[in-house]
Image (tube, rainbow, N blue to C red; front, side):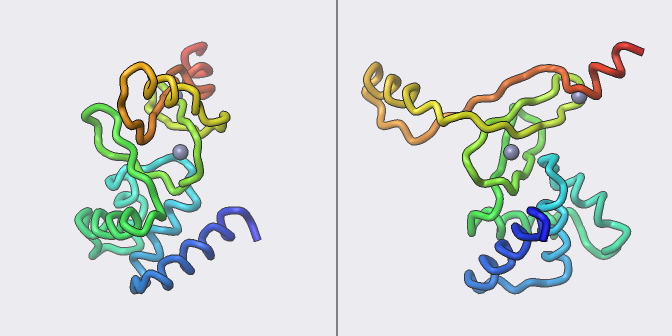
Length: 147
Ligand SMILES: [Zn+2]
Ligand SMILES: [Zn+2]
């Protein structure tokens, strides 16, 4: 089994144990998320699946994404005022974002716990989490710019 198949099986088991009905559409949305590692928007998922499910609306995609969010299968990523992206990698990781095409890639780095501790000491806040994004130009866009 590939990693994404394994994660798909795990995700289906989580859905079942949460009492969520697995409709063909729900299965397809989940499968798309698990196989595409590109943090899609609801619109992108809709476009990818519209041939297969002509009767499915963007609202259906959103409803399914809500269900996945509620049981912790996906994470919602918001950057400024562009539409939310969805990440099925719920392990701790950071993102690097391409300035040209908006592509988001995962990378792992030991959690920056000291930042949270320092912020607590300096401000007296009770820190819940932090987010960090790194920006740059992806390899594809670098190649395109050279031509
Ligand atoms: Zn790019
Ligand atoms: Zn990610």
